[in-house]
Length: 333
Image (cartoon, rainbow, N blue to C red):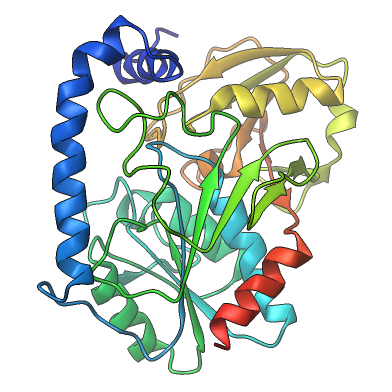
């Protein structure tokens, strides 16, 4: 399967954004302009020159300062479960990336991922929480609250730079790439400076808790895979050892998925796909593989396929209790 042009460009940019090489220095003047625009825009909301929507329910914003995925969706799912355990009834809002959405709409359990977005649909299926999507997060929050008046907390999946929606807690998520070369777009991967104020930082790392204030480590782990053509069938991943496996991932950092599978002891042929890959058709019909492992984010877009080789691999994360204590303090003032 030939590499998609967008995937090649994505991989090239991230390689260059990890250092301050010639490519980054050429684009450095553009990053200064980008920084001025972003700073001015944020200041206009802070000064009250542009209106914000203040929800009656507290809003927890889970976002990132870098472009691309950093593991926000597993964090949101874990946060929903943790807050439920503490007596809250959370609802979720999201942009619905990749879907053509103009008005707020619900990401119901049986919705089409191409219409509501793959990540909102995954959150809805994994948590059964009400999820509403719209590029205008304020409109999504209003629609969510009207449709579900019982919710007492709103979690926004991404939207850190969507200042029209006021928020009570801001959580910034990084993966192992952290802030790259530390420069703003397009010379680096940052949407905003690393010095931007926020309430807590979450870093996907296998190491102990980072030494910086209000910074917490989180780890991702796999649970039993489930067969996409028969979702009730589950197998521990260790049972796939010795089989001819193709692993495919349409996420921002596919190598993270592949390396986690290898650590279990699986021998893989891998296929990296562009983030939010459409899966309009099965690209592996003729693939010589016993098992095809994909992420759950990919699985929500190929539920109708009857190819028994496809298995989805769920990702779990557990949040640091100290982080949850910090969130509780912020919510309760």
